[in-house]
Image (cartoon, rainbow, N blue to C red):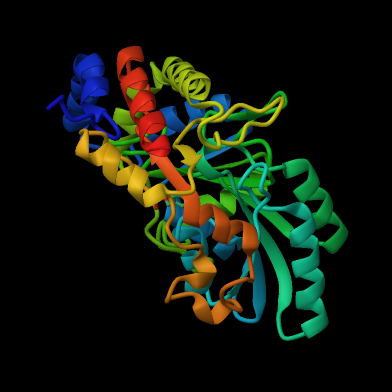
Length: 376
Ligand SMILES: *Cc1c(COP(=O)(O)O)cnc(C)c1O
């Protein structure tokens, strides 16, 4: 029996960064500013540089980041928010949390991201029905590949809708010469430990070039405070990024570019070894991915996963059901057949181990096992 392979190896990264992380944490323990301490500001400046935008706002999680965007736009009861049917549940739950209604739209076969033509149809359809007011579009950069913001922006401008990005999986990626964080008017990301840039707990960030929006988001992050702490000018929440998490993220940022390059090398090696045997993950000319996941498609998915597991190779399914078929969200869709691409991807997708510390012999061992399992 060969050794088990971790799906995501946070220990290898920790071994590399241990002294830097310890020093960063120690400094916070000594200055004692656990809420919005200096590390939060320092991290925000560093994140804004990577994202190529003016403002970065550290928040408590990716989910909070998305919910706060909806609060800032005053989206609520009677409003429709359009989002892909194939994504993590947080994308939809925040829409319902603010009282608005999610409208699930199919993804494109070539990217697994929001299909701009399907989006335009869904908006027209919602207007025709008349029950809801189309207000916003939440694009998702699934597995780390940025959505087609040029096309989505054109649809949103024509229809007068607000476009924002759920970039929980794509921080560090690019589309053309622009980084995630500067592709949409507002972008939200997550620092959940398993994301490409992960904290040691929950965390997230918001990005925008719009100083007025940034001020509103900072106010919402701190209970809707105005100029003074107890001057409450709007409905807010407790949505702050912890100073300790900011300190840890600052240490991890030192190696982030290197880790993104390593993820790309792993993806290219998988691509080379698996081409012709399985459907490879989507790539787009001119875009880079943050490779939050490396998802292949295979017809006999469950059998392949079981064979890999028997050899100590873990896999995961992101995600087994599109959201319009989830029990909690079924009432917002029209059931099986509504989103054919989302449904087909959910039936066949399989995520292989992906992290920057996956060495070439391990990638080879995994790929060989996948090839053998698909032909068995
Ligand atoms: C992880 C994730 C979120 C939520 O982020 P948290 O920090 O875990 O709250 C939202 N959307 C997508 C697509 C995600 O992958």
